[in-house]
Amino acid sequence: MKKSLILFSIIYILCFNITMTDAAEWVYYASSKSLEDKYYYDNTSIIADSEGAKRVWIKQVFSSKGRFHFMETMKHNGYNDEKRLEKISYVLNYFAIKCNEKQYNLISYYVRDSQDNNIDSGKPEPAWNPIKSGNIIEILYKKLCR
Image (tube, rainbow, N blue to C red; front, side):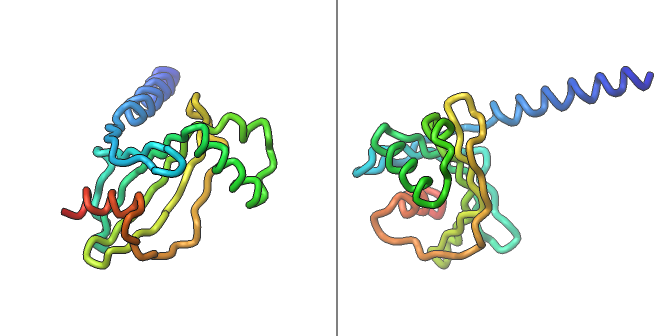
């Protein structure tokens, strides 16, 4: 009985994780003009937190130009594992957006390769920043805060 329960638990966890990964509904919302990266938000992840801010997962898929720029930024910030850097494909960012105050906060990020392996991750110091006109965050703000 105990083995059956353990086996069932493992199968449940594996199925649940696959379902969670597959449940994302990535909606294209912008491209960067200079680096040509593409930006998507997960339509299924949008929630309002206890402070009324909208939280959402963003996926930034790198172009070759954007990938090179991001790699250089990571090197400049002290990341020096060249082999892993060369595999960078996209970044998942978890943002909070205060619609009434037109501010955003990066809660966490995950740098991934094309096989969805984690290369780097972090939780920056919480800081609310103004949403500036003409940037990628403003486009998202306009979609989420209608």
